[in-house]
Length: 326
Image 1 (cartoon, rainbow, N blue to C red):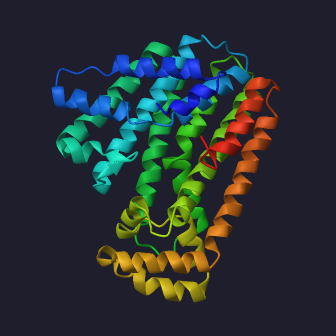
Image 2 (image 1 turned 135 degrees about the horizontal axis):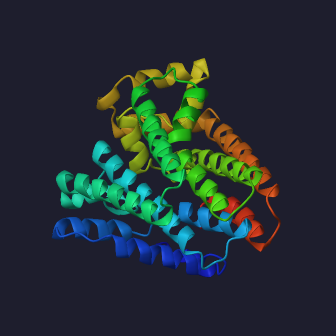
């Protein structure tokens, strides 16, 4: 777990409990599989989704020693870990969170089993935390949303004509769905009224979309050279927000399409050219403005929830989170 949370006393103790819960759940007779899972669990995950669930719970009246919310927060982080492992297998990614990925270190077979085992742990925790609850179905629906978002993204590979609506639909599934679930469960299992649960759910949705948009922006502004993830995305035909916005300008699109038409044969030099064209076209600034709009929508939702120290903390966290200061 990212140790920066230790400076936030409102949430740090609960997140430590979430981390312990995850560690306790990761048990397996296979040595390589056990090592792979513990490696993933200890690789400095941000624990953003658990933090949102727990903080929304506090806003809506839950006590900090609420064991049910800790288990639900752990289940969401485990589901997130499983999707990351499978994403790395699909993309053949050599790194995750700055270190060697599970599939690169232990092989694809072990990585597949690791992801599958995490899915079983996810359901075990749910059954323990909310037996017989309608939220078992809600979690299944969220898993389908995530899959649909990933499939939508796959269907759009190398499509230089995809629009903003296509992007938002895919992001709503592959990224925002877990943020939305975290906020929804935090409110519901804290005993919040239906209206506040709906408001919290919208907060998670908007925050998740803004979060993905900023990730896309960082691909183009993280330094003079394109970083590894965006190079992989370009090479596999996954086009992020700044590139999609740049492609909407026909003059700019005429510069970009010959480079993108190379598909899997695109070179590092080509990618640097794509980066320069996108930045010069002002698409990064457009993306930042759009991310700001979704961030404000999230903050507006928060403002409609009970006013207390936890809400004010989450408001600050939302702003800092989207600037990657935590």
